[in-house]
Image: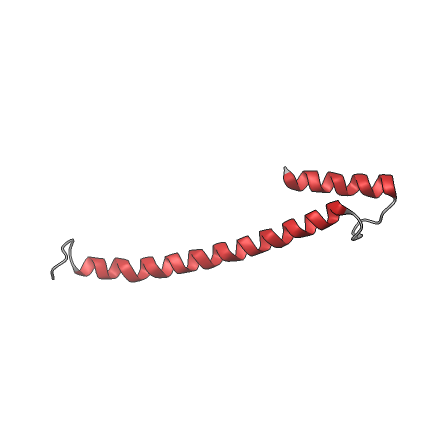
Length: 73
């Protein structure tokens, strides 16, 4: 929804003020670019989190099976 709002504002400013599509004077373009950058950062951090979680699970599960449910071997 927010992305549609930014796109609508971008086109409204483009039509009413005669500003080109990706001009820095259009506040909607700036908001759209900031949103794109935030989305890219969050996406890459989600990939890092997924990789770290998989490594931890891959490390813990085989070692947990060695103990057969007890803490003393």
